[in-house]
Length: 255
Figure 1 (cartoon, rainbow, N blue to C red):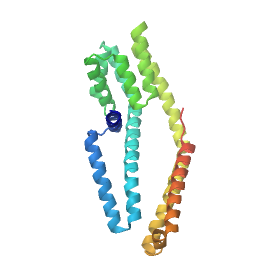
Figure 2: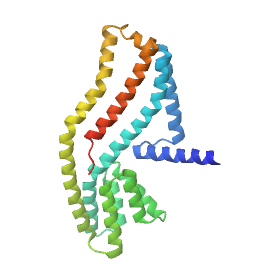
Figure 3: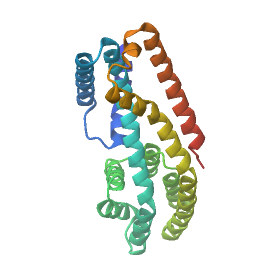
Figure 4: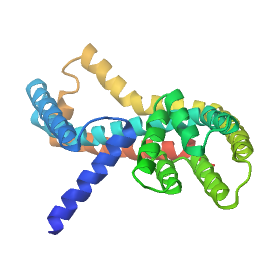
């Protein structure tokens, strides 16, 4: 039973990751694609180089897939954040036109681009199935990891309890979000140099290795054939990963 529950939790977690990345693929299909891709990459590396690198590729491929999902999820969340200001304007305009909140959300879903349209459509469908609107909005903010949209959900929840002019409240929230986005843009501009330096430092070992392989194909053979060379490569890879994580932490800001 515990094994079944673990597999079920894994499937749910993978389905959530795929959904956040915007990939309309079933978890089972994605696993098949990942396994086939890893196998083909390992076989190709084995035929072109040596067994050690083939093993490294087979180990690194699932990690690369996970990183890819995280990158796609981050880009989707970024697009959602960029669209939020315009989305709030659509909601406020719909409310001022006399529409109900659900109708305004539905209209915003029709007029917005993905991922806002997808998230708002899901919110509407969930409320039609009987779910509370506040819970659907909070879940959407959790899926998109958006503090700004969490404010919107809280503002709507408070309005449903105490009343008031929701359109004006959304305008005020939108103004606050625009100011935060301006500060965020300034921070990104100031940290861009550090991020570029980090990327260059991360790519430099691979670039030098590629140049050496082209200029002198046999120059790096001892690194792949001698046990000490393999150990040095593994240690270098670990240090490179740790250094990359540290650099990412240094140049990343949250506020």
